[in-house]
Image (cartoon, rainbow, N blue to C red):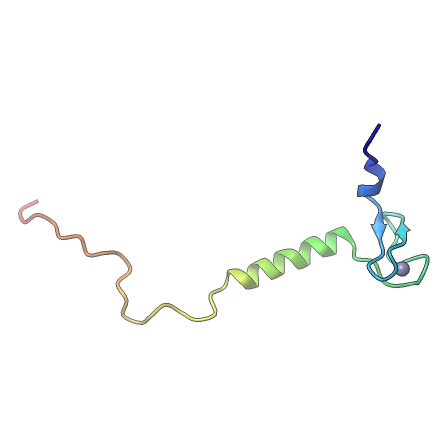
Length: 74
Ligand SMILES: [Zn+2]
């Protein structure tokens, strides 16, 4: 086997780089709080939601749809 699937589920400490158990909430080496996958996902979603919100609204009075001239009598 070339790949090590166990590494993917390991909690790698961002502070010291130590590998901790997936269920570990704190680094066993330095004690730094480990980012849990659920929290990471939630934070990612929150950041996505915040990024999706436009900082400034569209120009007021701007037409929403291009005024397509309709043939009279249609
Ligand atoms: Zn650590």
